[in-house]
Length: 148
Image (cartoon, rainbow, N blue to C red; front, side, top):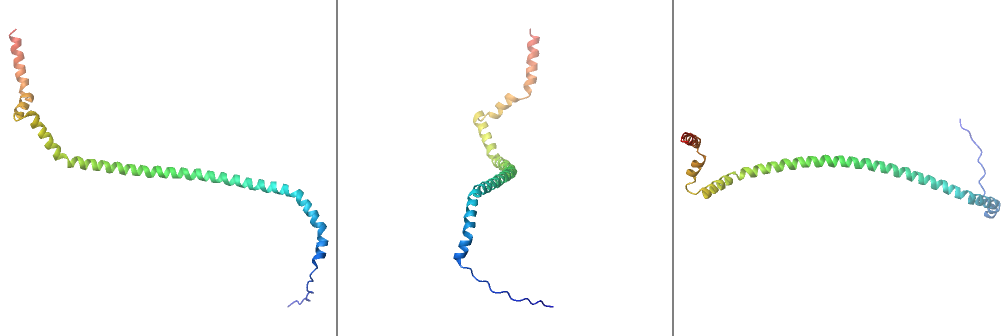
């Protein structure tokens, strides 16, 4: 079922002079009302833009602080891991260095002992640190006590 409607007549163009004459009082009235209303619209719009800017800056500040906290926590964690690894590496390298110089240290101590004590160093060490001195000292002490 189709509905057939009559075609409407084509629109005629109105001369621009007539339109201007018809709209001129309306335009001047609307322009005057716009001049009165425009500052209020501008202040409302400005207030709206400023409030949005304030809320946006507050949100951005909160998010920046949150991101800074996360970044600080992650950098602290990364630095602690790196410090542990560096400490372990330094400890290992010192241990290897100490073991590598062990033979050299033993040779240096031996040379120092030979230089300080000379060729008779062994007999001098035996004389000084010989445990028999306790026995000799005890016998000497008893003899001196008995002779008094």
